[in-house]
Length: 518
Image 1: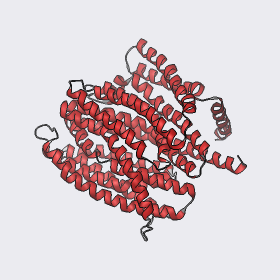
Image 2: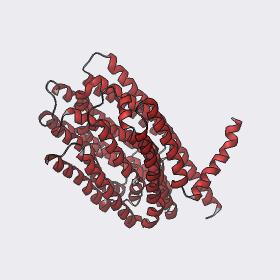
Image 3: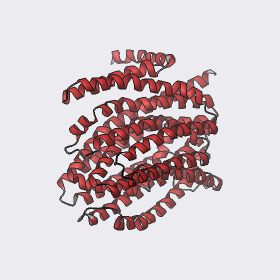
Image 4: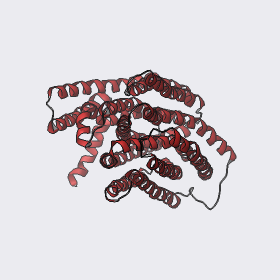
């Protein structure tokens, strides 16, 4: 490796670290704002209306695979063109994606206002006297979804350029706008369920205008004066997106469709508990998602530049760190979930504690696979990957429906998802090996074994400490503090090998003079 390559690699790693730290700070702020927002919304709407919001929002979210799939294609093809340093390809990618998103938005909105509206009118279980409010909420949610379709490609472009500072600033502003929504909810005299849907729509519109305006101003390839068309690129993106859509449909079925299933079989309180558990898992999971947001473009660019060993190192190290970033928050929440929900929510729905713990376990298993998913998308050959994993995920919903129909308790849907995620991890590793020649043995040694070690050396002492301490706010705070300390030490001594420990020490030493002079 020559001096230029060493400098480029160092700059890339530094950029990943800076982007991760920026997104990490962003998420800490958003987490507290988001958790407070959920509490106020639950108080203002009540458990029954919050359950309706979860069911209606979950129904609209069944269409979220469309912008999500296109976003993955947008980011993948933009990152690939950036890795090749191909300006013409960048302009063509923007033009083709713009046409695709407009088409998808039209088709999706028609489907929501026909099939979706029929389901709300005739199939959705809504308490007496709340049908009109639920229908109004559905219309607002459909419009919010439409706005999100037009927001997604511009968000993906910012990520492909690795301008995470911009993304972080806009996300923080969005979080505070949603905080403003919950305060307005308390003071405006209107049906709370309808009002909440309208205010969330307004936040979505402002957010979209920000993303679109920044991209049109900042990036040369994002312009509306001329269409740079490429029919071959269109077919390539549609082929990539088509199979990604299938994968996204299966992912949505694994989450939101199960919420609708619970709505059909259990009380609104159970649906509210499910909605809270999904919210908690998603909020905490974003800490590891942030790292993968920083990791995804370099993986694609390394593949495009044919730097395979660098890509393998990013995947192996990235999978381990992804799990660590989630585990440091998940462990104290798993141990102290009952106390945390009691402090956080005025009214804790039945089953919320158990549901939230199981959701976190599912998220932990999924987290270690995130960089593998990014690597699978690098070659652009998604058929075998998405077909195999998508079939397993659809099987989660079918199995959940079967066990619920057989009389199993509501928490059984989480057990089904956890077992399926373990299966999918093994299958995903095997498929990525076939796609890019990824070394399975090295991954098991350098990622899976350290992760197992981290879990054992942290969960056992923290759980033991919890058992022997009395109940109370200060004891809970002590358990959480000790959990953070033990997790950090375990990650350093067990999770990192000697090379990485030396890098951490070197980084701290380089920064010490700055801290002392500050």
